[in-house]
Image (cartoon, rainbow over all chains, first blue to last red):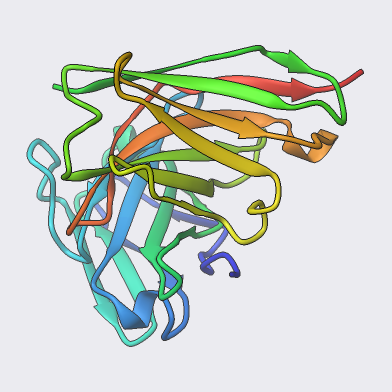
Length: 110
Length: 120
């Protein structure tokens, strides 16, 4: 199974919105509504920000939202804040009953 | 609130077997609602799913690691373990244990991670 495709980096200014894409295939992203997104600060464990494509865990800011169209999922962060600067990873359940991650996207808040 | 904690050697020699344990507190590993997973991350690189185990003992592994991986459960200690054999430098990474909620398929809870270096 190949890793999901994410842009290596994105950037935005405080208050702006950014979107990170995550492209897979019909065997993973396109085939299931089991896409999740993780935020990882340096030296820390990942933290789930979005699950099941567009649902937010309790405690996660509503500035984070997720969506999916075909084989591509997206994470949008609105009202960018300095604390949002981190690496972001998407993940999807697959038709082989396994999981696959994206390569990760480094978000820089300018 | 469930907590997961990895433990194991930080340095292992090439060709040897890595053994890591994840101790779960604040929740039972025997719960039928979760998969218990291992994920790794080489320095400066992305996350790689290694595999998981269900309370029944049923396992699923990454196709790329399947021939070298074994994940097991110890319900009496509320722990699950990872064995990875025939190690090479490419296995050097931070290893995380995590809990997946069945039906949601997201890694909801993570350990802090344990660094493993494969070197002679």
